[in-house]
Image 1: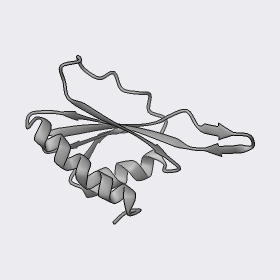
Image 2: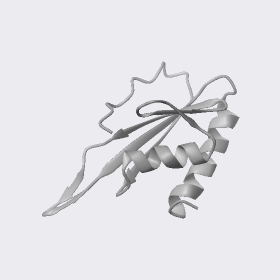
Image 3: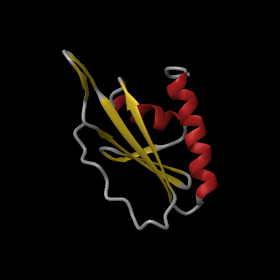
Image 4: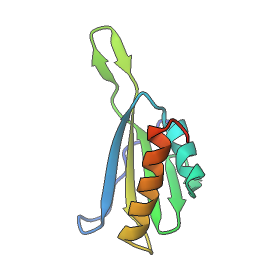
Length: 100
C-alpha cells in the first residue's frame, strides 16, 4: 500500500502519531480494523470518533540492513479526544502483543 502521508487538518485538531518499524501498512490497517475500525479508502481506517491514516514511511537503513517503516496518524472526528485515546490504547496492545 503506497499511500502518501496524509495532509492533516489545522493544528487545533488532536493528532496522535506512531512510527512502527518492521510491520507493513497492510498489517497495521488490519490491526486497526480489529480494534473497531472500517477501511474507508486505501490507507484510511475510520472508527467511532476517530480516523487513522496509514502509510509507508522511509525505510530504516543501516549498512546492508533495510527495515520497513509504517507511519500511523490518529485524528479525532465527532467524538473527540477520548475516542482517539481509547482506540490508540487498543491499537498499542495489538502492536505490542503481535496481534493479540
